[in-house]
Length: 431
Ligand code: 4AD
Ligand code: MG
Image (tube, rainbow, N blue to C red; front, side, top):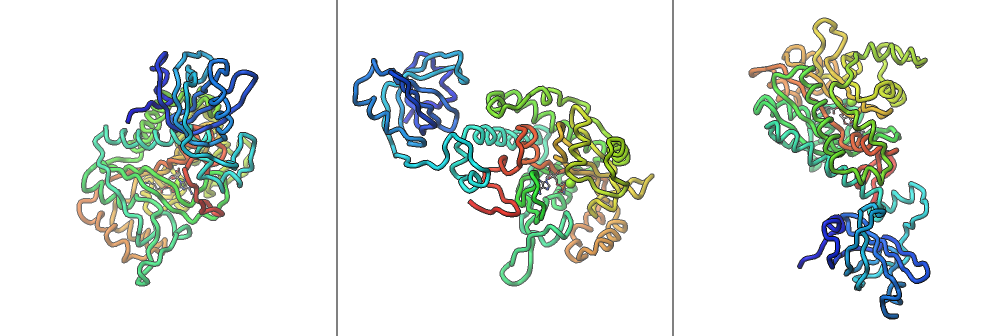
């Protein structure tokens, strides 16, 4: 069975085509009826000029309520004004299944209503544009690492212990025998994989019992996490920079139409070039103080601080060497400043905050053992992780890019819940 897709029509001008999809919207004015037809690949306007048709089809057109599914036959006509560059002259159509009282109309709805109808909201034009960008971000992240000969090593989701602090763990009852936790990050396993295979990455879901109700926190999100043996913090930042540039380039190349639908100003994205800014945490504190924000050494940045910082720069900025006190147990410390961790965050531009977190890992056995004890983590669960420092330890580093934070920035979406198909947040686990 052969039928065309809406996104192929611009190459089929003058031809008769068969399309399968749904009614996005209809309207009539005098002798003309318009059908906005969507098939998942895009939306095209189809036109029924009454004088060219019989009564029967004109009457049938009235049955085309929003989201009715149908087969549509038409002739492709060039139309420079149309976003897709083409329109369709309707020849005929056949209804597959009706749609009665579709709850989402083109008028404005409250976000809570839309979230409750997420299974249908996904069909809307802006949501479709976001999902296409997201799909590309995932695909080209993998391609980037593949091109550089990284191995994809999947990390487990059931984990025996915390990677990113014990306060945000989701506990799972594992056959009533013991407790396990949903993974916060694949990093610790990537460290094992990096010492086995050199350059590795994982791509998977991460879970955080974050009690924060912000526009950039999910309880379930996706991360791409590379880890590289013999890398230091500078190599690591450069890799992150290359990845971000690659992804932004691909989106600009492939998703102009979607960015237009989203009314995304692409100038700032075109500016995402080497080198990104690199400032230390201490410099960042100075900048914030100068801007009148009262923050002292030792305090972590909140969302408003990160927004204030990133709005100072015309492209992404790395903030490195945070106080070790406020960072994870596994971070290596700066040998000249043992109170600082060799970790970094990449803050995306335009007021969007942390999108990547990473750094160099503690590779000395005794030091790491001490840190695990200081953080009161259960040593038994970390024996295997300590082994990595016992058998041929090497400097190594890696990072995690939050897929949703990245897509949120690139599409300039207000709330993170719109850039994941089915969001899980503090107050929502449905649909
Ligand atoms: O900074 P985080 O917590 O770092 C790690 O998990 C490291 N183990 C990664 C590594 O080095 N392999 O998380 C990394 C990124 C953040 O920069 C952010 O983009 C995203 O994951 N992220 C979240 N995204 C949505 N909702 C949340 N609650 C998130 N928490 C982190
Ligand atoms: Mg972080």
